[in-house]
Image 1 (cartoon, rainbow, N blue to C red):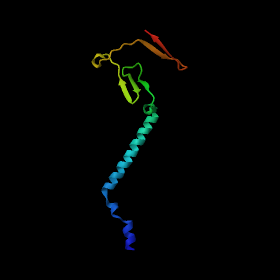
Image 2: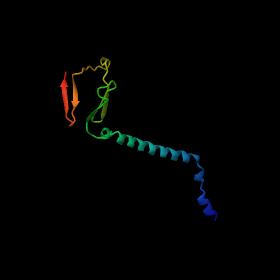
Image 3: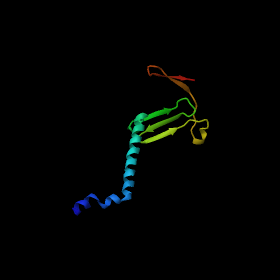
Image 4: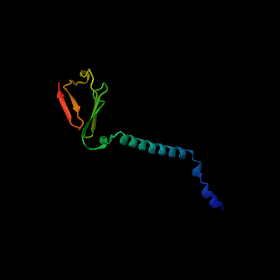
Length: 109
């Protein structure tokens, strides 16, 4: 009878760091699940594909940003009035319109 009682109440139950390790594991699983849910919710799965792409965030607004992926490198470009500090110069050359059928028309200035 003493042997059976000893198996039910082992010394591992009194380890306070075991609880912390379990909480850490639960937090890591939750963080990974949250990242996967956000990527699929905002349709950002192309960031993990092997294809090259360009993405324009907030087109035509002050905080517009162009994100391009070529191979393994992802570059972010934010157009601003003072481009000379970065060694990049550019100017607006036209406007692009997307029609209802998905066709894009470019109109030069």
